[in-house]
Image 1: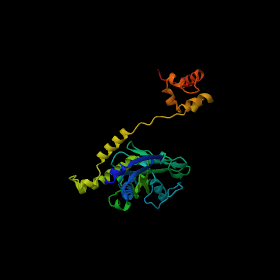
Image 2: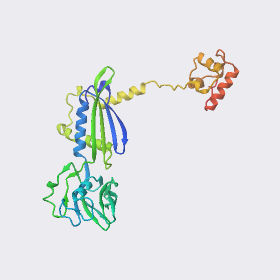
Image 3: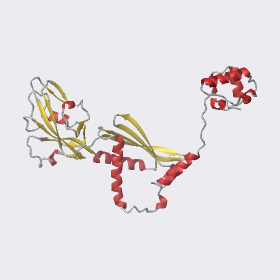
Length: 324
C-alpha cells in the first residue's frame, strides 16, 4: 500500500444494500488518484470477466431462420429470440444444456413456462416471451451455455451442425450495472484524499459482494505476474498493512471508555428533588445509581422524602443506590 496509509489509516469499506442484488460500496480514505485507479480497474474486471449463463441458440419447431413467423403467435421469431436473450439464468455445470418451452394454451407466455433441468435456474420467471392464439402451439428448444464476456453468433456458426438452430449473440456477464464515483475527502489537515463509491448490480446468479471479490482476485492474479518472486522493492516507501492494523487495534484498545449519560430528568422527579440533585453535580441516572444514601442526604435541600422519591424511581428502572 501507499506509504501515506500509515498517516491516514487503512481504507474502510462501507456496504449499503439498495435493492435485490444491488449494492453500493464506499471505500476511503485513499491517496490522491487511487479512486480512479481502483474504480476503473475493478469496473473493467466486473464487466468483462465474470462467468455467467445465457441462451446461445434457439430452435423453434417448423422454423429454419430468424426472419420467419410462427403461425398463431403474435411475435416474430426475431422478437421471440430477443426476449429470450433477456433471460437471467444460473447454471452450475459447464457443459451446454437444453431447456424447453412447449405451450399450447392461448395467452401470454412467460419464462416460468420453460422447463429446465436441475443445473439451470431461471432468475426472472415473469419475463414475457410471446403471446399465442387459441388452437396454436409454441415449441422452442434453447441452448444454454456458461461462459465469459461477449460471444457473437458468427463465431459459432461454423461449428453448429443443426441448420434449424438460430444462433444468437451471447452476453454471459451476470453484471447488469457497474458505476463508480470519486469524491474528495479529508483526514485531519489532509484535504486532497479520495473516496471511491462503487455501485454494482447483478442478475442474482452471483451477489455483488462475490462479484467484487472475483474482480479483485482476477486483477491480483495479473499484477502478480510482475512480481512472481514476491520481492519487496523500496520497502521503506510502502505501508505494511499488518503493522497499520496492529497500530489501529492498539489505539482503539487505549481509548478511554465513554460512560453512558442518561439525563435524570426522564425519571420525573419533583422540582425540589431535581434541583437538589443537579446542584449537587448529579445529572445522569448512571451517576445517581453510584451514589449512596449518605451522600444524597448530605446534599443541600435533599431530605428523606427526596430519598424515598429517588429510590422508587430507580426501582422502576431496575436499579438501586450504591451500598454504603
